[in-house]
Image 1 (cartoon, each protein chain N blue to C red):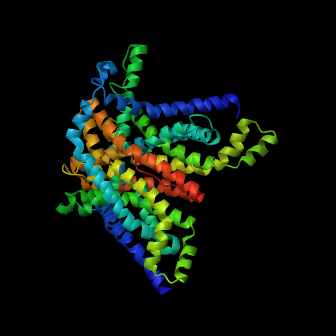
Image 2: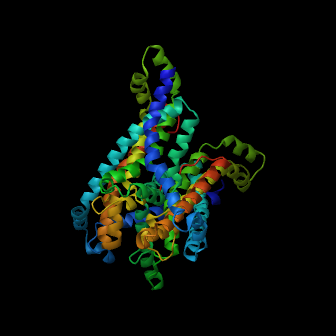
Image 3: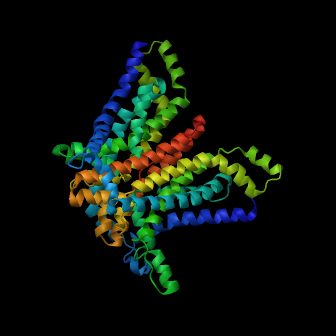
Amino acid sequence: MKSRQLFALACLLPLGIILAAFFLIPLVRLFLIGGGGEAGFSRYFRVLTMPRYYEALASTTILSLAVTAATLLIGGIAGIFLARNRFPGHGLLVAILTFPLAFPGVVVGFMVIMLGGRLGIFGQMTLALLGERMVFAYSIIGLFVGYLYFSIPRVLLTVMGVAEKLDNQLIEAARSLGAGPFAVQRDIVLPALMPAFVAAGSICFATSMGAFGTAFTLAAKIDVLPMVIYNVFTESADMATAAALAVILGLCTWAVLALARLYGGTNVAAAG
Amino acid sequence: MNRVAYLLALTLTVLTAAFLAVPSFMSMLAGVTQVYARGIASGLTTDWIVEVWALYSGTVWRSLLIALATLIFTLLLGVPAAYSFVVRPTRLTRLIDEVMTLPLAIPGLAIALAMLQVYGGWSWLRQSSFFIIIGHVIFTLPFMVRAVAATLSAVDIKTLEEGAASLGAGPLQRFVDVVIPAAAPGILAGALMVVTLSIGEFNLTWMLHTPLTKTLPVGLADAYASMRLEVASAYTLVFFIMIIPLLVAMQMAAIAARRSSGVRP
């Protein structure tokens, strides 16, 4: 029995050492650097009173909330629809809708350029229809579209996974008792899918808050927090401020995911 | 669902699929078009792909190498840990599980900044691809461990092990002869996930790379910022060609796993 315990411990040890050395210790160090120098730990509050930083935090939060709401609506409807209906082309649609899951943020940014950049389809269409080439890729709309692009596949998969397991007997029972299609959705389907929506929504929000590659490619004029952190780090080399902002951002995304998990869903976010 | 609701939902789903597919399709097209602004009428060409290969093939090989190294490390660290998680769940394993999944909740940018603070000064490490590999291992480990642990709990590895133990097999022999074969579907699913994520990782890699350790996504960011649209598109096409087989394999592995064990991986 003793040897078994030792073996299980030995199995755990390498992972524990690597995590501690290359993740935990660096994270603690980042937190200490953010609280170092003359300002000390008051920097964590002070950075949030500086317009450049709190405005970035506010606009990133608003953008992420808007993306989450739009994604839950679109991904929710499409996910429930695909889970509950079978038709020719079903597999192809699911494949197309989940393909972008493997795109890095930079590629998503480029997809937005293909849609709304100077040579984008949207520009060509508006040129043909309205006689004016419209470009949205480098504005906040471009960021919104890009974040929507990488969020939809994640939400869709989560919703589909739960909707497929939905008990059909409940729906049949509600129908036989006289509930219309709308009432069935409102009273049976949506409550059953609530944990999936919470999980998917929290992942979507956290990923949007931390997304860096898409904003980087679009070089948008709007300052999202990850871009601000990157700029502070590279341009002014103000390490303490960059560290404090990174810790604040990390705490935000972690807290959202932890709260959602407390509510009941399990969520595993992926990179944006 | 009644007819109107059905049609509305179908339309929304198809439009959403178009929103996702059209730009990737246009980009693939642009990568093989002479002059994208003039459309396909200007003629198809492989010149851009040749140019991309001449400029950036190094990033493709480096990304593949990093993905492979990342896979080896996640296997060596992750499979034994997953076994330990399932067979002997303790307060310690729960704690390690929490810490291990933390990199999914914290933006890659912050993790990379933290790594740079501690190890940025170690120039031999900072200047080698190994620094990027470490970042990718930290980021992909939870996917490997979760996939393997899910498979091991589904096959009831404890009972299987008891059987092997009663026949006199030692811990190491049981691990090699019983645990690893039982975990195989999970290992496969985890491995595909790890390789796909590593090849596409940008947020960490951008901070950790040097001009001599550029990966594919880093090169893509470079091309998007400084190259003409056709070259950027051809480069993106190369990336698509690399990940599509991985995604298809992932789908097939998931279907096979569901068929063989009746559980989702």
